[in-house]
Image (tube, rainbow, N blue to C red):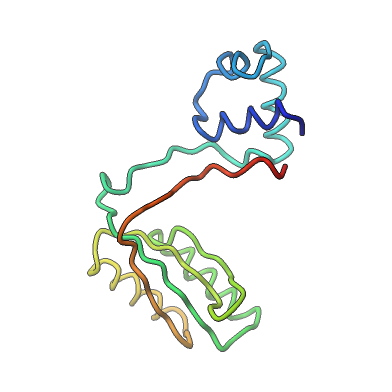
Length: 152
């Protein structure tokens, strides 16, 4: 990965719909070599997929909850049940296995507290937890899908 590849990735992270000719112009390549680089970056897995980022407020998803989960069961069977349970709930948009005091961190987007409560009850119906605590985002200070490329 060279500087040109990184610049291409930066541009794609900001706007994946940019024309290849425009990307090429911005990185100093003609269209064909730029297209080949993009294809190589995709083939090698640097670009996982291209998506549209939607406005949650316009979709009536103004509440973001971060749910910290603790479990007393640390085995493959429990993890499979947990993974399947969170996969079935579209309101759960991110799930991380954590180190430290919390075992899992979930990001949930819903319209309001009542909708969050429905998701919470669906989740605890499917799986047993030792402890669950939630925090609700009051304001988004920074939200980006762009990854820092200086480490690549």
